[in-house]
Length: 510
Image (cartoon, rainbow, N blue to C red; front, side, top):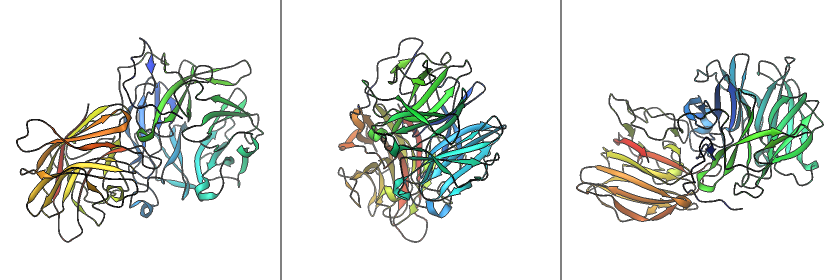
């Protein structure tokens, strides 16, 4: 398998778009059209708020407009970072005047929420089916008023995988009406393994299950059809890497545009960049089977479903008006009271939270993160540390199984600029460069993200007229099922009394 480094792709021909349409870690995407609007959600795992909601008018240009899940449940299970848990592979649907999202938590079961307005308020999570290993659920409301649900299994929790289970469901989505039965057994299909991520549809007199198989990095997209929702199903591989450089093109959403054309959104695993999202045209062959991309292989560029809007992407920059952060940010666990300070101006004020884990960012729940862009860019933020105790620290980080950060730390002599990192198996961080004084308690921090997810750190402090490089290049890594994250944090050692705050202003990605 070859995963190409992030480089600026050639421009798409006039009137076309170029993949990926979401060049960051929007894992396991699902989407729905309502009128002329498209809405997409994605896995958010252990981050809060979770279940991001993106909006588009053309399936190409997307903006993040909010989150459907304020906090993960059960609450106590997510007081610390758990990056391989939480919200796995959601499905979003619109039925009976409401938006619905179903997702599987591999440790607790299948949850459901709904809302009249996609921007909320959303209902409290309802546990539809309790159990371990229940993942990737998708509902279907049939034309006759009956409802169904299909889901997959995580072997790590249940000992079962490569199997899809179907249920009858109450039309209100509140309960399952039977014990479930296997509708597709991947073990009975020669060459099929890790069958998961099912999406259930009705079209042309057939029940359809679109489901990936073959593993995250190397898999393919399958389509299954039957005259009965519980099978038996016949299958086809409808999208695979083929001669392209798009490894593992699978798991996503079939969307029908207002003009009747069909499209398929799917992910591609790209190492530290996570699972980026591609858009493929979809047609039908003479036997009624879907043909995705160019004869079953991903396209690099194509005309959009409708004339493209002005280029847009989910927000990255933030001035933090009134101390509030934008929709692109989430905490690495359920947030606690008093982690931020509200105020009347611009800038994010994080409290230097006292913790025994201050020297390992992977253990901190109070790291504010957003997705690392999939292409080369420069990340900058201005920081003022008002921490008053020795060991108070704050900074800008690249966070994954390994992490690195640059920022300010208070010691007995004053405030210093520090740059530290930790390797994946290391329990504590180490210095990546010699510290230096930051007598004003201020710094302008920068990370240059280069091809291959290499990161160069630099900073300006005091009387510096230019950024001064700090330490060697750092290779960003993914974080279990999550791509590398950009993070802001403030922390302090354990102890009594307030440890101060850190103010971040003008966060920019260029």
